[in-house]
Amino acid sequence: MTGNYLKQLVLFFLSGSAIVCAAGESTVDTDSPPVYKEEDYEKVGDLGKGAFGVVSKVIEKKTGKIYALKTFNPEPRGYEHAENEINALKQLDHGNIVKMITNNLGARSEDESVHLVLEHMPCNLYRAIQDHPEIKENKREILYQVLSGVAHIHSKKVVHGDLKLMNILVDPTTMIVKICDFGSCYVEELLLFPNRPAGGYYDDILSLVSLMKFLCFGQCFLDWRCLENLSRDEKERFLEAQRNGVLPPSNKLKTVYEELRKVVSENGLDLFLELVVSKREGGCTTAADALRHPFFAEGREQDPLPEEPKQRRAPYTYSRRNPNYSTNKTQQ
Image 1 (cartoon, rainbow, N blue to C red):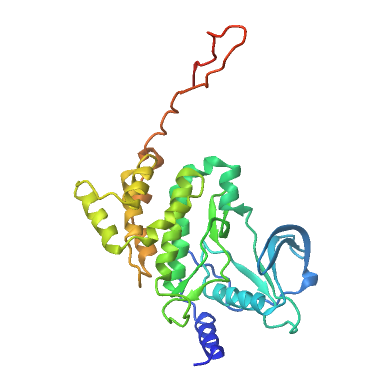
Image 2: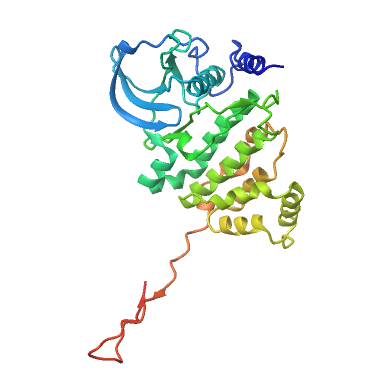
C-alpha cells in the first residue's frame, strides 16, 4: 500500500461522522464545526509557540468570549499536524478534552495557514503548579480528570502520543482539567505506522505515571522513564511480592516506589503499581479501569504527613580575631 493510501485510511477512521455519546461529552456538534473567519476574532495576546505554529489569545467580536487560536505553519508538516488534530478532535468530545470551536481546514487556499479555534484555559499544569503549589493538594481530582480524558481517547482506539504537563490545561479557580494538542495522536489498532511499535496505550499510561509523581513532588523526574525499560516479569514479580508482604527485589521500580511511599497513601501506591504493570500491547481499557480504583474515593488525609526538615549544621567559619570561634551552630 502507498503512503497516501495509509494516510487516507487513518483519516477515514479519525473523521467518521458517528460519535458514540458517553458520560462527560457535550451536546455541541464538534463533528461539523463552523468555518473559521479571521474577521470574527480580534487578537489580544500571545499564548505560546511550537514547532508547527503559534497560539494566540483572541476574542470573538460578536460574543466577547475568549478563545485560543492555533495558527499552523503553511508547510507540509504544519498542515499534516493540523489535519491530524482537527480530525481527532471531531471524535473526542469530552469534558476533559479541550473543545474545538471552529477551523478553516476545508475552506482555505493551498498556501494559506490552517487556523484552529479552541476553548481557552488559563494555563498548563506545569505553570499552574509552579505559580500555585497548593494545587498539588488536589492531586486526586486532577489525576482523575486526566485519566477520564485518556480513557475516552483510548475508547476511540486512539493514542494521544504526547501527554505531557504542557499539554494538560487547568483552571486553578475551578480545578477543571483538559487535555490538548492532538497533532501527534494516531490510531493504535490499525498498526499502520512502521515507526511506531505497538504499545502506544502503555506509553500514554506511563505518561500518567510521570504526571502522578509531578503532582506529588511538584517537579519532573526524567528517571521515571526508566520504568519503561523494565521487563513485564520484573514488574509483576515486584507487584506480587509487595501485595504478599514479601521484601520485593531491588531495582529501579523499588527505588521509585519507596520515594513515592513518603507522600502518597497505600491506595495511591497500589494505583501506581497497577498502572506500571498494565499491558504493554492492547490495554486500551487500562485508564477506564483505573477510574474505579479506591484511591479516588479517599481524601488527602490518607496521605502521609510531610517529613520534618532535617537539621543541618552551618559550615565552619574561621575568625582572625578569635581563632577558637566559629559560626558552626545548629540551624533549622
